[in-house]
Length: 328
Ligand SMILES: NC(=O)c1ccc[n+]([C@@H]2O[C@H](COP(=O)([O-])OP(=O)(O)OC[C@H]3O[C@@H](n4cnc5c(N)ncnc54)[C@H](OP(=O)(O)O)[C@@H]3O)[C@@H](O)[C@H]2O)c1
Image (cartoon, rainbow, N blue to C red; front, side):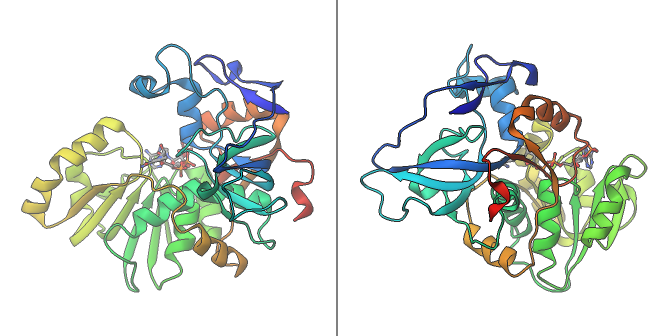
């Protein structure tokens, strides 16, 4: 099979598409023919070995996992002898980052619980975008308890994966959602349904004098006090990613801000594949779609990784791996 291999840490240029032996499933695993995949920050971390501390877990000098790729959609080919839930031919999708990754390949093996059923109405390409970004968005939106009508919400870094799914998940309720990103993405965000869009290169949302009930952040570019200022009384700020030291500062100072202001600051830890069945239902009902950048051919993965690093993409970058990605 063909796979995108990185034998050392480095830039996207060290990734090459090569022929490697096809993995065989263990007893509790399934073998999946990957039809489509998407790119996430975790994949880039695996390839770059950055931030450096992650090499303590991934291999100090050489990566132990040499095929990245966490979000996949594909067809089950074989199942291990302990697997009863899946059968050859089943269409599945999921986030493999809780295991050995491997989705940047024509075939991958994963634990049976790492995937959910992909409805026939949901294309492989749309499904491949959902797992990690939609779960992070859902976790952020529900960090202060279930969403309810009437809330005013802001999503920072709203033109990417988490933001595009986050808007649609939030809009299952009667809420007002503002989105912050760079100017080139604002038209797409308005078209998707954001009630207000803010160009972070022109304006600092924390200094606008506006207040929100809930802020979901993918970038964590300000200090905790700025986020507290932008929250209404009792409001919640939830970061899913961004500057690591600012996220650490949030974790350390959150008890003080809670005591002094009554506002909540929280850091979200990804719970892989949470709620995928609910997302499937929303997608089938036409209420959740993937804002797709691509799909790009698998052969172009190294170049597409370079493009991902420019952050010019809108929504999710999708890579087509299987030959009949459009068949669903
Ligand atoms: N918590 C966890 O367990 C966990 C697990 C996996 C991933 N993550 C993190 O979750 C996040 C996933 O986000 P995503 O997939 O939506 O990323 P994405 O697709 O790259 O989108 C991020 C958006 O933010 C914009 N942006 C950059 N700097 C900004 C700023 N200062 N203010 C506002 N917007 C800014 C980018 O556009 P421009 O650059 O063009 O401006 C881009 O459109 C990442 O931070 C990732 O590291 C967390």
